[in-house]
Image 1 (cartoon, rainbow, N blue to C red):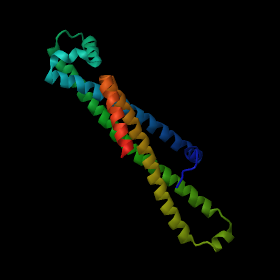
Image 2: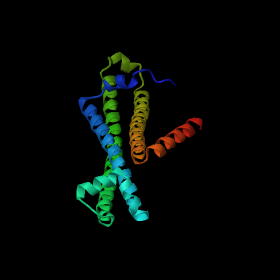
Image 3: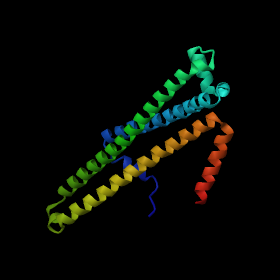
Image 4: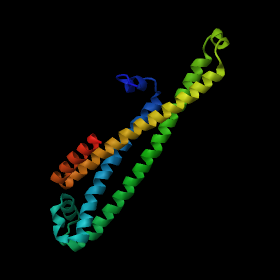
Amino acid sequence: MRIPNFFILKFWKYLSNKHKNELKILFLLMILSGITEIFVINSVVPFLAILTNPETLLDYEFSKFIFNFFNLTSTSNVIIPITFILAISVVISTALKLTSIWLTFRVAGSIGTYLNSKIFSNTLHQPYEYHLYTSSSKIIAANTFYIDATITAIFGFLNIIYNLLLLISISAAIVLVNAKLGIDSLIFFSFTYLTI
């Protein structure tokens, strides 16, 4: 089944201002979640460098930033700040992920409920003759089925958007850590995904 062009824009105009604002907030939260993923990845690499090879710590831009920000002179003094930054960024990233998932479910359900009430209201406001020749049980069954499918589609679409934003942010973080490895990995995984 082919999705008509600009289906999202057509769907957007049927939403109430409340739901449009909820979707904007959700999108902003998804972007923030992606940005925190960049911080998590950029703080994991120096943390692993401290544990494995502290001499290479200053090879990473994030480590240089930590050294300058906290006015550190020795690599032994940087363990606590980098561990603290890693822990805080993981907690914030996880909280934003969970909030995004919760809000995605909530917004999809809220939009589905709103559309269900609009459809039911439109059905009730039909002329009397329409109700004489139409089975109300079929209308209710169809309404329930299609609204459930619509909620599932809305959730799926929002989930695709969220995962796409995470993919972009994680790819950007890997490229920031090691540009050659990041680009090579992106090309390899893209090629592998497209061939499967």
